Length: 294
Image (cartoon, rainbow, N blue to C red; front, side, top):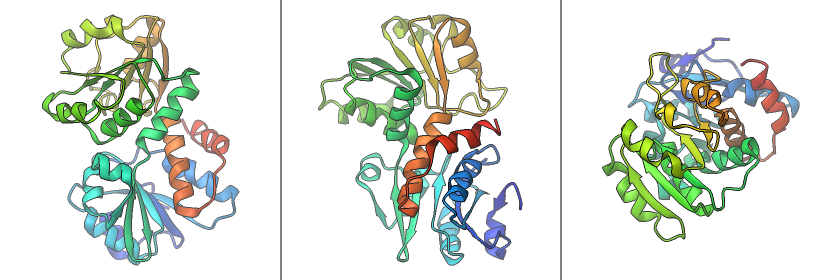
C-alpha cells in the first residue's frame, strides 16, 4: 500500500480494494489520521482502509466524484482545501453554513454532505490538555481568518471567554467575523500579526492558540514573539508535526504550559468517525496509535 495516493490513482483505480475513507490535503504525507482511524476501525472489526490522498487546489470536485464511484464513505479535509470542500457539498451542517468551510465529508445517497469539527475538537483538546475551563479565560487566536480559525473563534465565543483577540496577517479578514461574534458577553477585538502588536497584548492573555500552519516547516517563522511568553500563559499549537514546534519549544523554556494539535486531531477524528459509521471509536486507542508513530 502506498504512503500517499493522488488524483491519478483515483482515476485509474489504483487503490486498496477496501479503501473507503481518506484524508485529503496538499501536502498530506505528514498526516497521522490514517493510523489513528485505522486502529479504531480494526478494533471494531470494520473492513475499511483509511488512506492519504494528495490533491492540488482546484481538484476536489473531480476527486469527490471519483471517490463516490469507488464507494468511499467519506473523508477528512485539511489545508488548503476546506473552503473548496464547502463549495462542492450538496448539503451542509449549520456549522458549515455559518463558517463557510468544511473539514468532514460524508458521501451518502449520492450526495456530498459537509460538516465541520474544528471548533468542538479544539475546545475539548484545550480542556483535556490544560485541565481548564474556558469560561472566563482571556484568549488570543492566531490565524483567525483561516478555515479552522473561524470555527475555533466561534466555538471559543460560545464557551464564554472573557476576551477573545482575533489575530490575522490581513486584519480585514477577521473584522466581519468579529462583528458576527458580538452577540455574546465576550469582549472581541482584532489585531494584526506583527510582533510588536502581539507583544503589547501578551500580558492580558491566559491562552495563546496558533491556528496558522506556521511551524510545519523548519524554515517557518515563529507566529508569536516568544520573549513575550511567560509562565502565566498556556500555549496551544494546532500544528502537530513536528511534535514540538519552535513556538512550543520557546514557550516551554519560558515556563508556559504547552500542548500540540494531536489532541485536537483525535477529538475531530472521533466526531468524523461517528458521523461516517454510526459508532463511537475508542479515543484512548486512537491516541495510542498516534503516539506510537510520533
